[in-house]
Image (cartoon, rainbow over all chains, first blue to last red; front, side):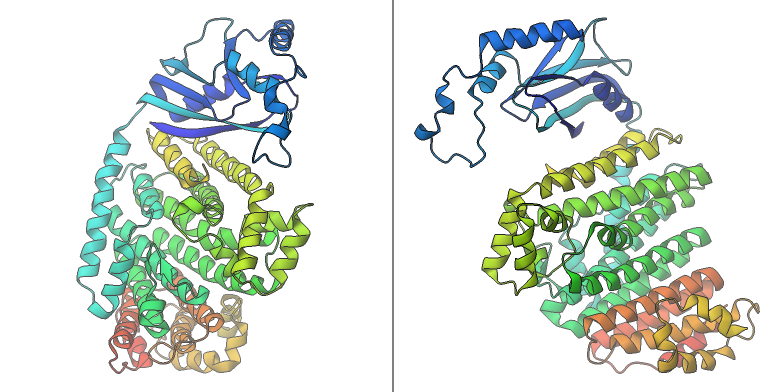
Length: 463
Length: 126
């Protein structure tokens, strides 16, 4: 099952947006052989329809909707004096809601032999009834995909990672192992090792145990950098547990980070693949350099888009890219595949960081809202909010001063009320699409659907 | 010759050269004499960066302020990259073990071994 969002912009008040080709693309990219694609409008003034895409007929449909539910027909919904809690920009759109009632908000289409099952004249439309707006449809692809074996293989290998991590932590001295165990056992998405394991199954030489050892080393390396980051950012908690610096002091944090930095580089060297060792070493250098830039940029908080991308490419995306390339290198995949996966990893890594930035503004994330603001951490929603014509001046003024609870709360409110989060969402989704496009350039031995799924999961938190 | 190669590998860390990195580098040149001539400066620099890096971080002592810690991290990362490019696998492993030993001692509150001796010994692992 693959779940995602289809996003688009509408340009007119009433508009029939033909989404057939986009749905065909989704089916093809996912490698679906047979099954169903479910669509659901996420709006009360956006309908769905399956009909013929003939311009005059579309004008007929539009006229029909206007006759059945004319605008300005005195809808009670538009009598704002009788309604409570209405937004300042609440539109007069009773007619649009009524028109949506005449359509449908959901649809299921069949897929056979890798193609949408549609009659000769059938097209699928998202019907805008109150545009122009940003719109999104939830879609789920449910069925048999070209090759699900890699997914099953990866499920088994993921257990191997956990076993390998546990084994490595078992042999380490307690003063360093205990804090690292606390961090590792607290969870984490394991995106980097998952990507590494998957890509290690692409080339002709597949060695799951060796790949799991490398994946565990990369996860340890990532956690080592987090331990130092938490000290630098003065974070008290990570993954719901106290950070090493907060619980055991900065001296222990420095030592534990250094120990696992060294241990991970040793485990990687012991794998004995020069290309892999160099790839990960370069990523590590990029992470450290970007971390220095990140801290330096806090003087010019919230920074700009270019600086943000430069830092994120080093701080987050470098290890994603290295994990993807390393897995492929280990499996002796061709240079074209290694490079395509490296680019895929970098794009997914940047999108992942953008999604992570957005979590800071989500009350349902389980993390305290506004932590990035408080810590003056580089964050794309903040950059966009600071650029915003309406809320920008106030955001910049607040960020220039000291940030107490009231100021942090107000900045979070301004970010949420602006278009900043939507801009980040659209940008992250575009990066995921570009990452998926990279996968289409090379033959991936049936791994494409799983890698597509992982790319989407990197930004799942956006919805 | 050596300083030319080192200059390229010192990007963003140039300021450390006069602050002790140069002296540390010189101390390792003799220990790397048995390696390929082209690799020698990079190996000596890798060792010097570990020595200076952990000193900057305050490993085994009082933790450095965050910006200094990050420079120390970059020293260790640069060293790892130099080793990946220029050192035999056994030397890479021995270097990592040396840092593990230092970090483990620091975390346990034990007195730390002498890093220079550990790294000199690491070069003999090839």
